[in-house]
Amino acid sequence: MVLYLKALTSVDPFLLLSVRHLVTVALTVLWYLWRRRRRSRKREDEPNKTLPNREEPLVPSRLRTALFLVLMGSSMAVGDCIAFYCVRNMPLGDYKMIAASLPVFVAVFAWVFLKEKCDAFQVNC
Image (cartoon, rainbow, N blue to C red; front, side, top):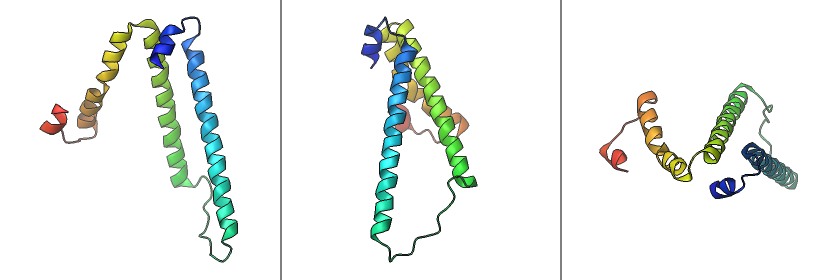
């Protein structure tokens, strides 16, 4: 994807990013509808079993999960925007070097904010 973005200089990177996210959303919605339809067919095939009480779609625990997923998706979209902008305006080698160093930053932030253990094995990897 990075090479395509670097080669397509006449196309706005945010347009490419928008198309990428729209395709992802469309495929996710199609998968969700297919899965929901498949589950409803299974329920019709087994009428003798008692179904558990169905929860409302957005009860507080599910609402919290939905909000977390929206926040996570939004942060990933912002990260993709920044990455696409960097690929367009930086040399490719610099971008790849920064992208390769991300696991180090993740480990440091996990150690600082989440109080994760940082063993010698994890430091060497």
